Structures are given as structure tokens and as C-alpha cells.
Image (cartoon, rainbow over all chains, first blue to last red; front, side, top):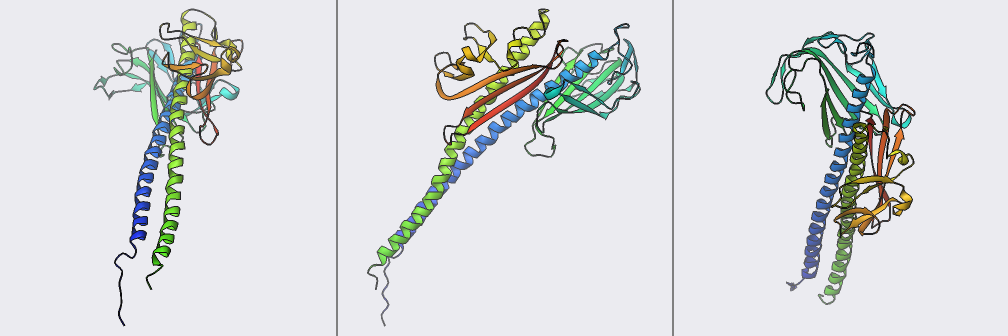
Length: 208
Length: 169
């Protein structure tokens, strides 16, 4: 028996497979690019959400501090959740100890719960990001926010009241003597899950 | 024996081509749709941001000028248009949607930015809603900027909404 072989067998099939491979590679590359575009634009949106959450938390803390003041003395009321200035240079622990506070109402209700309760004035010595060595004493407290129709977005704020020394040069207009000042550092997050790989954080600072 | 094999081979090849190209075609279509979505989402986010920033500026201007907390923005309780004036006159105002193309905006090539009215590309609807959270006391407000658009492919409505809590200080 004589076997005959045709060397052209399968050429069309091979060509088809090659064509499909090329088209598939190009298509997957394009899809990969657009997928990255979507991630980038989503990050931009999430970043804006985090930014406004941080600003909202900052405003809420500022409002709470202002609304817990003593109109007679011009200093703080005894239940100020961030610590009580009874004079420009004297701070006290709030009474009763705060479990949190809230701002707004209805759909605009923001709730803050205590993460680090304000304690009696203590040393706030540290070296900040700019290399400034703080020698301040005061009260530090920290709160976690939720609400405001923000879905799973959240914010945290650290409020520092200074009764002695200099606390930081990182904040705007904070050079020089920080006695009697209150520092607000808010961080907004796009999600409540801090281990989320798509987590975006934005911060906002204020001194008054 | 080999006669006719090319026909079978061609049929198989055509089948492979059809199946093999359908997938990539679907992927390419999806890619184009997603590309449009990404572009429009980016624009919508910036439009929403602009509205919130301008509303915040208005509140701060009111405080600085000793004007009522929600002065010039109190007509936004059920949604309003944030109208930015042309480049030569960097100012803004908060007006009812009915006199601003029902809050629908698009890219104005002449002026180089998005304006209420007809324009190029996708059409966005931007509304700012201001809620007085402490009526009568002028202390707190909730600002909500919502931008919606209809995807060019698929005709589905998408939206971006940003919130900002603001106080009177």
C-alpha cells in the first residue's frame, strides 16, 4: 500500500487559527486598556467622595466644637467632646465622657462615635511630617463618622486642643505659638473596608 | 482520497473563524461601551465637584459678607442649575432649571467648557440640591450635586452623586 501525503493539508485551518489568535489578542489588549480606564475614572470618583467626606467631617467637628462653647466665659462648655478650655491655657477632661456626637438631621444626619476619648491634658510630644518637634501639652481625641447618604464611605477626625507649647508646623497658619489653638485633621475614605485594594483616602486640615 | 478535503477543511476553518471572531467582536463592543462610560463618568464627576465647590464658595461668601447663610442659594431646595459665566467673567449663580435647558448641559466648543444648553458629545443633567438641616437657625446645610447622563451605547442612565455637609462659619 502506498501512502500519499499532501503537504498543503491543514493550511487553511492553520491560517484560520492564526487569524483568530491575532484578532483575539488585539481585542483582549483593547479590553484590558478600557478596563484600566474604568478603574482610573472610578478612582477619580471615589477620590472626590473621600474628599467631600473629609470636608464634611471637618465641618461637623468644627460645628460641634463651636456649639459646645460657654457664651458667658467665651471658652468651652463642660461637655465639649474634644476637651474643655476653661481659660486660654487651661484644659480639662469633658464631663460626662463623650460617647460621640452628631450633626445635621434627616438625610443629612452625621453620626460620630468615639475612637479615642479625650483624657486629662498630657504631653503631645512628637515629630511631625515636616520634621518639626512638638513640645505641646493638651488633649487629643479621635472620632469615626458615618452617615450623610455616603453609602459605605467613612471619615475619621483627630482633634487636638493645645494648652501649652507648639504642636505642629504642618497645618496652615500654625507657625509659632499654638497655645489655645484647636487642630482638626480629618481623613475621608471611599469605603468602610480599610483593607479594600481600591481604598482611597483624602485628608483635610484646619486650625482655629 | 484527498479530493474534497479542502472543502471540509474550509468549512471547519470558517466555523473556527466565526466562533473565534464573535468573542473578540463582543469584547471590542464592550470595550467601546466601557470607554464611553469611563469618559462620561470622569466628566460627570468633575461637573459634580464643580457644583459642590461653587456652592461651598457661595456659603463662605455669605458668611464673609454678613449675608444670610443660604443667601443666593435658597432657591435650590428642590434642585437648581449651577450657572458658570463665560471665561471673561469668572462668576457663577444658582438659577432654576426651567430657564437653563432643564439643567441639561453639554460641551460648548466656543467657550471651551460645559454649559447649560446644546453642545457637543454626551448630554449631562446637573442639579444642585441644598437642604437646610436646621431651619430657622441658619447653621447647617446638606449640599447634593447629582449628574446624570445616558450612555451612548446601551441607552442606560448613569449618575454620579456627591454630598457635602456645610456649616455657617
